[in-house]
Image (tube, rainbow, N blue to C red):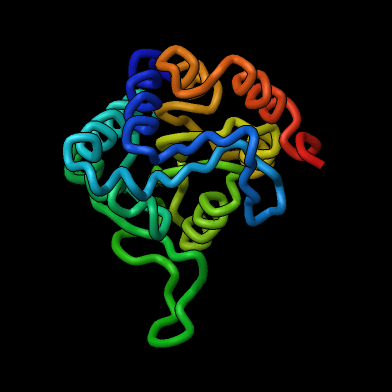
Length: 211
């Protein structure tokens, strides 16, 4: 992770309120986990300059980590606009992966280029446990294509995601992550000192933080 890029992306996410920090009134995730942070990176597509910055930074990351890439894939729906921007920059074929197969027509799950032997990098906007993007990895692999890796804008950097990606034998790189975001939030006075402590406690033990 490039530190300068990580700080800049985290700063922009906070600025446009794609990330909301609320340690004293935590959110409840779909998994049931109580969390002092809520991230909605879908907001990034409303800001053309920032959206372009994300695409350029992801393209640089992919060229560095996966130089052999042949196809860019987006995880539906949030990953699609960013994958589109990256595929345009790198001049590569594009696909996107639905959460599940259609129940009509050809009953496909993947649209666009995805052929046996293709070297694919998948893009999503956010990584919590990795469930969504890893389902997309499985879907691409079922076609005979090779997922050489994954990238995303932001990761909570939770132990469960590390375990899940390792089990799937899939690499993940992100532009920024939770520790960087909290560092930036503190330096730019988005949070108070005691809030920082609560956020760091959650990071160390998300499942047992608020019971």
